[in-house]
Structure formats: C-alpha cells, structure tokens
Amino acid sequence: MPEITRDEVAHLADLARIDLSDAELDHLAPQLQVILESVASIQGLAGDDVPATSHPLPLTNVFREDVVTPCLTPEQALSGAPSVEEQRFAVPRILGDEQ
Amino acid sequence: MTETLVPFDEVLERYDPAFGLEVHVELNTNTKMFCGCPATFGGEPNSQVCPTCLGLPGSMPVVNAKAVESAIRIGLALNGSIAEWCRFARKNYFYPDMPKNFQTSQYDEPIVYDGYLDVEVEGETFRVEIERAHMEEDTGKTTHIGGATGRIHGADYSLVDYNRAGIPLIEIVTRPILGTGAKAPLVAKAYVAALREILLGLGVSDVRMDQGSMRCDVNLSLSPKGSDKLGTRTETKNVNSLRSVERAVRFEMSRHAGILDAGEAIFQETRHFHEDTGTTSAGRPKSDADDYRYFPEPDLVPVAPSREWVEELRATLPEPPAEKRARLQAEWGYSDLEMRDVWAAGALTLIEATVAEGASAQAARKWWMAELSRAANDRGVELAEVGVTPAQVAEVQKLVDGGSLTDKLARQVFEGLLAGEGSVAEIIDARGLAVVSDDGALGAAVDEAIDAQPAVAEKIRGGNQAAAGALIGAVMKATGGKADAKRVRELILEKLA
Image (tube, rainbow over all chains, first blue to last red; front, side, top):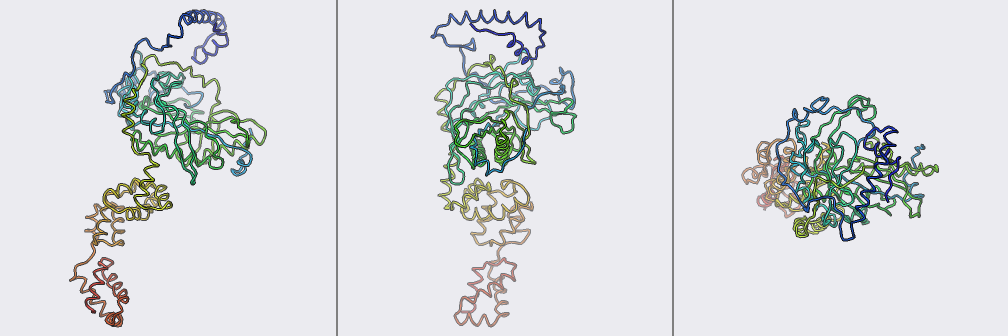
C-alpha cells in the first residue's frame, strides 16, 4: 500500500508553490492518503495483460505540417499581462537560477 | 571552499577525468514544436506567439511533423535506435521563461537511444556513446532589469519575450566518457565539433554556437587514478563555443583536483562558464529544485514512427562527414597534413564547391589556404564569410589556366573581390589586369629588352637559351607583370634565332 507522509505533502506543496499552513497539512495529508489507497485498489484489478496507459484515445502520430499560421499581435499577446515594459511581460524579480 | 587550481599535468598524475556532454540544438523548422508560430529569429518582442506557446487556457499543442522527422534523422546519423513508441512529458518548474509552468519534453521515453559518434584526436579514435536524444521546446528569453551585472542575481525584475518559447529543440546526451586522460578537453571539443558537422550536413539546424542555436553543458568529475568509481560531478552550463568546451573541461579538472587534494568533497552544483576568463563560478545547487515531477503529457498522443518511415528517412542521410573527408582526401590527393590544415581552416566545403565549379583541387587549396585565409584572419571572420565565393575562385583559376591571368594578377583580382570592387570581369577591366599575349604589344617590349641588354641577346644568339630569363624578366617588369611569360619566351627565341 503506498503511503504519503505529511512531509511529502509539504514538499509537494512547496514545489507547486502552494502555501499550506500546518493545520491545512494536517487536514490534507490523510485525505491524499485515502485517494492513493483508492487508486491502489484499481491498480490491483489490472492484470499483467493490461498495459499501462497515459491517454484514453487509441491514437498515435497526430502531427501537423510545418506551415506557419497567424500569430497574435503583440498587443493581443500582452493584453492580459499585469505589467508590460518594452513590449515584454514584466515579471517579479526571480529568485533561483536561470534554467 | 578551497579554490586552488592544480596544474593540468599534475591533475593527471592523481586523477582520471570522466565527462559527459548535453547538447541542445535548435531545429531550423519553419514553425514551433507545438504550434504554427514562426520559429525565426529577430522578430519584434512577443510578435511570434499564440495561445498555445503562451500557455493560455484552452489551447492545445499539436506536434510539428518536420521536427519529428529531424529528430529521427539526427538519431540515425548518430548511429542511434529510433523508439517504436514514445511520449512527451511535462517537466514542471516555476520560472517565467515558460509561460505554461512546465516545459514539454521527453523523459523516460526519448525518441532516440543508444547511439555513438567516433571522434579522432591526434590520431587516436575515441567512441563517444550517446545515451539518448529527445525532443523538447525552447524557452522564452528573459532580460533582467536592475542589479549591477544584468545577471539574475540582484535583478529587480525581469522582462520576458516569448518568441523563442516553443521553438523545437533536440537535446543530445552522452554517457560518461572515460579513459580519455590528458585528451579529455580535446575529445570533448572534437565531439561537439563532429556533432556540429553532422547536424550541418543534415541541414536540420543552423548550429550557430555564437547565436545560441547550439548550446552545450559540460558534466565533469574526477576519480582517483585507477578507481572505477565515478566522482561527484558538476554541470557547467552554456558553454557556447568549441574553444570554450575545451577550456571548461580543462578548468573544471584543475578546480576539482584542487578541492579533492585538500581532502574536501565536490559540491554537486551547476556552474556558469565565463568566456572572458575561461573560468567557472557557482550556480545553483542540485537539490530539490531538480524535482521536476515529470508526468506524461496528456494533451499529446504518443509518437510511434513506423519502421518504413524510419527507413525512408535513413535513405535521406548524407554521407557521414568522416567518410566524406576520407573520400575527398583520396580524390584530391592531399597529404594528411594538408587535409588537416584545410579542415582546421574551415575550407573543406569551400574547396569542395570550388572543385565542383571546375577548379583543380590543388589550385582551390592554394587560393583558399593562402590569400583568402589570410584575409579572413585579418578581418577576424570565418573563411566562408570572407566575401569571395567558390564560383569566383574557380572563375579566376580558369583564367589563370587559360593564360589570361598570371598568379600575380590573380592575386590582384582577389584583392579587388575582397575590397568589394565588383565581379571578376569588372575588376580585371577596371584594374587593367588582363595578361598581354598580343604579339604586337609584346613584340615592342621584347625589342626594347633586347636593345637594352645586347650582351644577353648575344649569348642567346650563341645558343644559350637559359639566358632568356633575364630578358623575360625585363619584359615582365615593363608590362607590370601582365605579359604572358610563355609567349614572351617564344618571341625572344624567335627574334634571336
């Protein structure tokens, strides 16, 4: 049976930039554990003859031709941005490092 | 932390280097990986974006067929296997260079696996094993505002242009390369150079390291001599020239050895390479930040290249560069040394094109390796960008072969071409460079030379034909080097018979 600890939930929340209080962690961690157990019971039903799947559609190779299609205008692209400078999205100072 | 650098030779007395290279190649497709926005450079900021590459709600990615085709061709050219079935995955991270908060990449199912590339360094061949090559998308371009250095540390805020976000990338990852010893820096450089050459031949990328269409990360570790256990590695990012690849390996070897000699442990981290000093500095530690929570991309169906398609693409592969070099060397009759020089000067394809235009291999080599290489050096540009085309070199040589130009005059034609004075014909015309072989004009000059040097003329009359050289020289001087020397000799001997 898979287990998810409170610490792991806290770590996941941190990775997902979700600010959880101690009370929320106490509340949510056991709930996630229940969800994992439910999923595990389904896993028990799949025999070796059932391949793992990541997609409900029995499709492969859905491609498009390498042909240019119209873009948004810069004005449209930036219209939803909270802050714009020099026709670019202005974002808060970034901690960490360049990818 | 100790930062003592150990001299390179000393490093090798105590340690064996192991290194690996991750090379990112931007494909030269018309459009992005998952949407139809143009993948060209230089557009106004945020003018080549759409809901898909901006990660707007409701948008759906669709894979660019041409990018998959390029990935497969790259894989085949690197002697790799092509996956029969593979998926894209989301690499989740929070950094504004990807507006989606994830990069669509491939994780445990790369499209290419188990390839290799043989590279030659100083007569020794090393096999570089390629673990995988996978498809992904490039990120947007961030500009950091405020702070002293323009780098990220100390920046007040950042500006993001998403034109580059979504351009198809192929990441090519080697296995750790062992047993190269003192040649490690050169093998690293030779691998990237060989890879670049292959990609250029495939025509799938501009592979301009200076413009970022080919980027290299260098992983390096040292282990005590004789130990078969790999040491802790560092990853040096964005090493963006062939020379820098060599320097980065060399520097990290010296730096690691200093730390290990002091009995300290290597700190696993990314390092930034500095082109100006050839050194690296600490980036971020490798830790929880690397927990990308990859999972299969639910918006894209698997890629399952049929074996027929793969074989069709295999048939489109150009001749492998190493084989091509061997073939051309045999065809051209160059010595090993000549071939190496030609290769190092970046003249191979130029000479090939010049020969295709009708010049002999020797003549083509002569012009490209002497006059034109010198000019490229003086100007600090690549030979290919010096301003003279293979067709022009062949045209000039044809005139030399036909006797209407001498080598000396040809040099002046190249001078004119380099100075942008027009076409070969225009320069010959404007500078008055045609060889004079007209008997009337030459005859007068020959007569003058004979009159001026009666003693020499007498010797020739007496049967000493070797003495004609002095008169030929005089005629050449009088005509500014434009006389057809062969015809001059004939005329002298006729007149003094």
